Length: 397
Image (cartoon, rainbow, N blue to C red; front, side):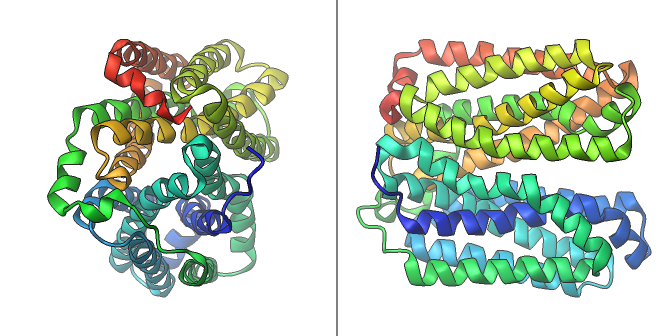
């Protein structure tokens, strides 16, 4: 466990920081963009959806079609597409070109995360799979912790176009890092497969079941988190400045949780780590439901929600990769892509569930609705763990 992590994995983290930055910063710039493009906030909000749709489609779909491509080439193409998309976003003067460019950059996002997470586990070794995945996704959580507040602040000083050009510059730096430092990945089973093997992997029942846990876990968390700002402002009755600090605390704890989740996965196995995180999320969501009026408790619980939500990332990703070693060894990147789609699908589903519950039952209901979804995830996880072949996913212990 004292071996050095291959440096190229940190290059992956730089790339995922750029991915996370452009995904999250748009939320903070929506009002500015809508005023500049003379469109409504809701129409510009479609830029967030377009990016997520691109990521959902690109992660399993394009990764499957490019199954035989060398991993280095596929990562370079994905990062190039992402970078070009952000350049085009910065040059957009109307909404439609921006949406198309956001969708294209989202495609690159999905492919890159899917391939980078599977390659990282191969380069680091299975005994360090959780730590390797946590480094790769660490860029995303760092973007959440400091990238979005920083980007929103800089957006007040510079134009939003400058922000997206800065993302493109980061993407270019990541592209060059991959070009120079990434070795050719040998003995990669995927290079011996074909596109049909990749497409079959998308419909593998074991991989779909594993990604289904990811969907429920993130739907439960984001049923509440999507609406955490109005909850803090209206129910906890804090100022906008205090709410921003609590959101920053969520991001910082997310980065810590991501690191902890990777270590826990390597020490105890993916199944144990996933169950621990799910149980923690259930407790935190129920506690938030009972504690929204207390600032001190909400400060602690908001941080805990961030830590557990992102501790789930390496655990869930490592678990699906473990299942792929058994049930789809020819397409580990496609399996990773399915799980990436699961994260994005869970976020979208959580936003819909939370929105429906707050419309019918008020803001606080998002907490117990999220808890019910997490309860379903725990039940399904227990059922999967009872199946002998599913237990063999502990190859990643």
